[in-house]
Length: 415
Image (cartoon, rainbow, N blue to C red; front, side, top):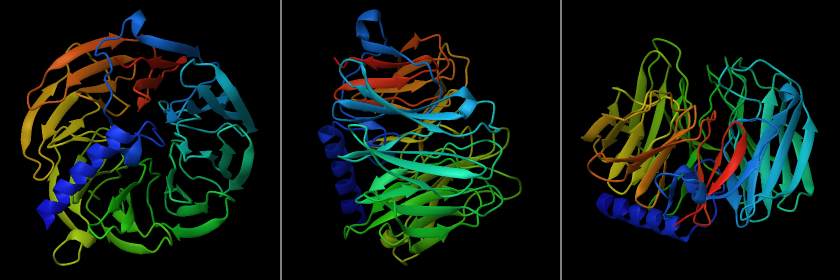
């Protein structure tokens, strides 16, 4: 049964990537980071469909639905927060909406707009927060404001950066805070009404975006990662906790920044501290375990990513560490296929890798776009130096690639 489920899940994931022209959340459908498009490995002037200069800053990634690209941004040192809608084919700004906010302390590598919008077929949802406000707003794709909701303040000196996701008619807003007091929310997409709220005993502000795991019977569960609590599973429609499994180290403070992904009958999550331990843990959810309990299956702790999220492609799992060391392993066992450092790039990686067809892209903090081949042997295909700060993850939709840098939003034409 497990083998069948893994095969079925892989087929479904592949079909989803083929069918999707949308990129509705951070790292696309269910956070997997995959699309069956063909993007040039090295970008020349002729590769650009368009380039849009950005007056405002932010590190949040673009989200795409049909012919619209959506982006969060900020100005005036966070005192103004913005939602932008851009035409996917021309790069023309269709509309912007601005909201007053306030400046606050952030990590030196964070911004006041590090969250990625979440989308469904009608609306775009944006989130930002500071010590006295956690603002959620919903607009139609045409820019009409539907509702606003303030879920209270956010505790944590590194600043807010969490991205929401849509599940059916609910907007899921994670909010693990420093030293407890946070909660996860399920908001009605049409009205903003709180349909459920789950208080959290978190010890650290968390930045990871949840994913959805679906068991063989078709029952979905929301999977969250957090340093103190580990993996948490919630029933999406009610917020009821299904199970929780603490698997990350507690000798010293850590933080979950990288987002979990589904790999067949496993869920993979990362936690760590910048200068100390980092853990990649593969767990089997209770719904697919023989004894009905969530179990750790395997883990890796040598040169693991802290900020970039894992990337699964068929029988290869790519773990792109912040320092540019890539480890390729088998997702079922964690057995290493190859491990190497990217060539010609001495920089930190804050963005996560994405796969466009047979090519994997990841962008360094100073805008060096590294392309490698998706395969059982390491092959670096090229490096494009954008010569701009870039702490974002590319979006893949409409056969094209969309990337937000410190100064602009760009679109690279698919081949």
